[in-house]
Image 1 (cartoon, rainbow, N blue to C red):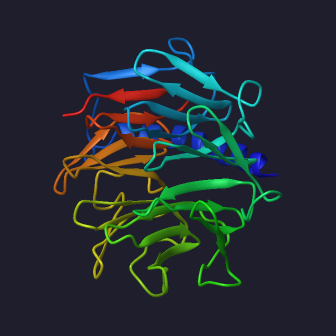
Image 2 (image 1 turned 135 degrees about the vertical axis):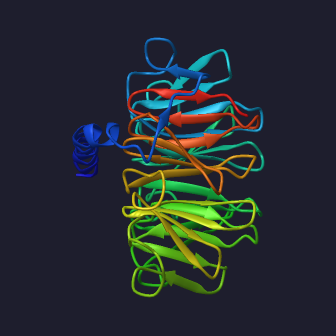
Length: 322
């Protein structure tokens, strides 16, 4: 059922992108540019399978770990290595999320459980052999103490390396058991997105939604935290900035954003905000918006050299850092 929902969501996004394209091309408010230093990787010029891309993370050696619907890819800058259920301990080929911990271990969330890969050995955690609350893992974040926070379809899981703790609607203030994104704040607070935005300081839960805050929509798809500890929250109805007191909404009415469905956000080394939507990639420097014409952005990750790695429709784009 999960894959069926994903298929129809992807189909809807493509239809929206196609129907809006003519209108977008006729606008003068949001001029698009094509950067000179794109490098595009796909199944024809790399070792990646022909597939959709879900996520990417960068390890301590600046290697790129790329999650796809058909397995996990490692790119060291020259060579490509593909891990799947046939040649590794990966529990499922649908790799939804990846996080690298303080020890350079890779934590891989799949449709069939959570995998730990230390570079040699694989360990699989699922509902049968651990405290994981659901086998479908949507997101992973590593806090300042190297604890793993795991978002699933059955709530939020904390794993400290020994003990599992599960937070859900029955024992916490989480408004929804479907956890889509997690970000760790500068003071180690956890910001959790799902059916609203939650702040968890380790003791107290604070829930933000359209009824009690300036949040533009209760479906929170992504969260990023900038150098000033501001929270940038992507929703179905635009991008929200929360500075701890005030809310600012950026959408098609007041910014370079054309499609209000914000799929991903990343903060680069210059504190610029990179935003991915169904129909474009945007960069916001705090004053001006730059719009890059690149369809259906699924993720954006910044590497150690401030390069941007952008997952799009059946391709992975590299944009050299500036």
